[in-house]
Length: 404
Image 1 (cartoon, rainbow, N blue to C red):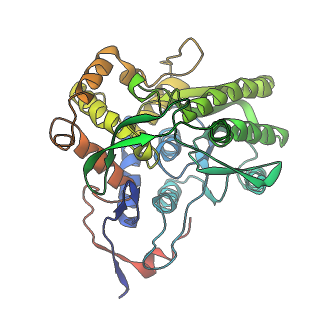
Image 2 (cartoon, rainbow, N blue to C red):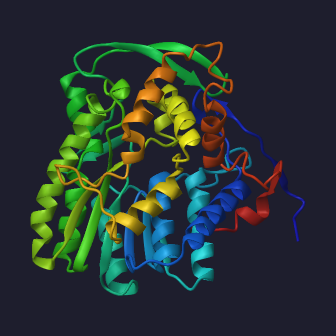
């Protein structure tokens, strides 16, 4: 029975940052993703999986496909904001964790949520202790899917590294999208300093991934045949200034070096360290990367017409089902898995670049592009515009009793 304390909710954006959430919409989005995976049937994947950054986007999708595609027990580590009061109902990831756990437990699966900073030694110790004491003693999969704004130096906690989304060696001007105003505007981003490049590598590279694997191995909680995977992105040359050849690109290069180091760590347990190059999708992070949203609304239009457009759950389920645990792996010359091949298809890229040249502030929000898809996918991250969910209020007493 509903209480009398119904709290009104509505979409609130500040630029490209969501300032509100619909918990019931988040629940339905989690269920929708679960149903997608169930519809694909069972595959023989992980049985005990740890996802660092498992509360949203690619991390959540990775967790869902392991649990409901392979029957895995899962642990997620994520830093999400809980409910504060009736005006601040927490983050979408907070609710994703809660509702994922509900559904996993209904299916008879273990689902443990750790809410806190994955970079800290304390969090690593908590997770290891849980694996040893309550999770069967070992894991066979670690997914590292972290998009963080900052990280403290583990050797000097007073030093804080902050990641930057910037080009290197030049300033770059291009169109970006303001989701709040539904407008296209010109933006100039200055080049990063070497200090900013180094800080971004510390935060978004593979340093912490290495530490996690080393400490898990030292603790004896990695199973024979253990696999670990980190997500990278290359994309189109039109986004290289900000991504592949920018600060984030440097971080991803460093992550590949980390993968090689990790491989040496786990050779003796027949382990495998993987880098997977993902396709462009709508996330909380991707909407604030300059020029990238304009690329997305063109790319999505082309891929929709070809029938190859994917959301995070579609992309990650295919990755694990077909490539990591299946018989259809696609590796490049550097040993990276390439499920982004559909995005990188020559004809797809040619048509996307041509379409980008046609986009103007006057026509970007028309049938010429997939802006409506891009915006809807972003709102769905926060529980809004979810098909079948039309509530304009939530039962505050009910939702505040829920814990991740």
